[in-house]
Length: 282
Image (cartoon, rainbow, N blue to C red):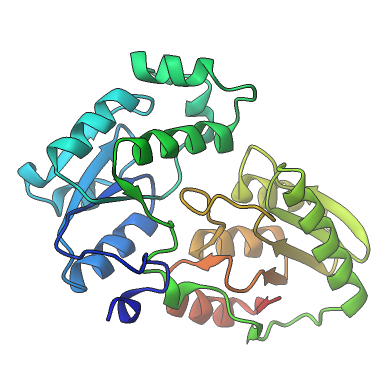
């Protein structure tokens, strides 16, 4: 059945129709492509200018991939039609700054942007998602095929530092509030003090900032937003984040279970053990 493939697929999913992967940076789209492929689903690739990894692009034959620049919404819709696709999925980060400079909107995008009251990553991607849906292509939940990488409840790896329950509940409270306000999804707290809040710069830059404080007993908390649009916006925790934590001297990470994707979970948990970093799910 479909659910053996992924809980995030719609009930009426038709695996004979091509799934178009709109691929941003990193390993996330690579893993998703491998898993969808091994489930026997025909996949096509939309390469985003200067974002998609070469390795992923080269793994697709030329007639099964296409190239667009970030912001070419009209062209994106045209390519989806050309692929005769039933479904699309957006995976991998797009350089945040690109949405504000270096965006090369075509006519369709200009009209779409003009209709937005607030212009942030969420509203822009949300509007692109709606255009895709309007064109008759089903935009899937971005967690599709990533079920096995979702954070579990409870302790996943034990770290060197103990986590104080009061500090933990403080961190979760701040992270949830921060996410509710749509500022960002990660925070770092230390013994009841908020050291850093993730905003536009992304997780790794925030963690690097914390490294300058020399604080003890730091805890990194990452949660989903209360009304997250999971078609394009899924919180990710990966090996890169782990290395940044190590550099910044942060001993523990707490991730919202079933919401945060631990990208390539086996290798992340193995590396966390080696580095003495604790990872648990809330």
